[in-house]
Amino acid sequence: MKKFLTDSIGRLDLIVWLLVLSFFCGSSLLFGGNLQLAFIGASGIIIEMVLISLAIEIIIECLKNNKRIGTLTGFITNGPEAVCLLVGLVAGDIIFAASTPLGSNFMNPLLLFIAALITRQAIKTFSTNKLYSLVTICSTAILAASFFLLSTDYYLPWLILSTVVTIILFFFRPKEQGTEAPEEYTFNPSLWLVPAIVILVISGYFLDPVVSFAALHSHAPKGVIGFVVLATLTSWPEFKSCLVLLSREKHLAAVLNITVSNITNIWLAVIGIAAYFFAA
Image (cartoon, rainbow, N blue to C red; front, side, top):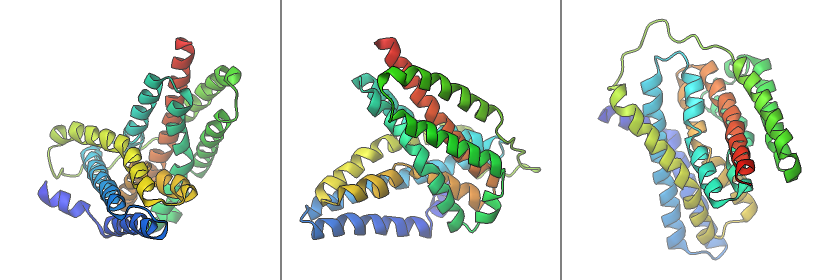
């Protein structure tokens, strides 16, 4: 297990950590922020990213012989969004509750593209079930965008349409075949799978507040923080999953990780809206 954890930290992780520190600390110097607090915030982000990365590596290692690994990781990496949804519902803010899962539907496909380029698997990845991938990504993105343009009077029709469309998309998803010969596990999956999922959910939930803390004290431009930094870092679980799956040449699993994640994001929003109507 120790060797596995050591091997999980790669050159890309080190580069990203350096970029995070440089961005927030550099912004604090340029825009008159608090350098010490910006450094603490950036360090907190790095710690969160380490925990998320290790949790993803462990989960995929535990599931590597499961023929539905892409679908399962698509569900699991949405744990943080599910927690944020619950927090929003408890606070009675339906827009906040739905915005976290729906916002991820725009960043997830971009991160799949970046992961494919980094792992040099772009051609094989985007030639895998092209029609299904395109239809699912576009449909879930349109559904997510349309929600923010609607008044509350149209929430119920959106809920019905979104439910029908995503159930059809999920039902017709490509079937994963699995590996012909089961691979030997590095460690006992029954012992590590549940703790890894718990770490992923908790770390993913706290990533947003930590990024916001670093942004506040670095005085970084809000537009850059909102779209580039915050949106990318809060989708780190999906990005890391794609990197790991593509590095193992599991192209369909990586595609399903994103498409199922997008479908699940719509379902989370649907649950939130249904709860909103029930409580009204």
